[in-house]
Image (cartoon, rainbow, N blue to C red; front, side, top):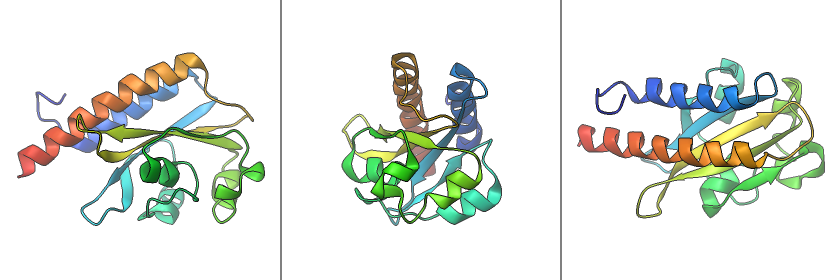
Length: 157
């Protein structure tokens, strides 16, 4: 898809959908991309409602907020098995809880140089952490997302 120069949104939606297929019915994935201002913007979240995406649009990376903002700020994987037990979700937990999600995790999307480009977030309908299979798959998918994001920025330059 990158070689065919398909739109970045299509590529990222394909990657998010692939992540969801690892645990069908149990997870919903979202890819957020850092914009020129350093804010998280929706790259692809095919199974999240528009009002939810609008509510989280333009989040600033912050180690004390949620999973994606924290992963973008720290460059590390962030796990939240239970929104109600994690103070990083104090201001935002009502949003995913209203959709039936109880936890999430986020994997930073990084360039080859280690610069954070965005996040690969996955929401859970059950209180749990990602399985090793899910972690391995998202690691590969996040790398593919990085290739697509970097390629898109080079083509735009």
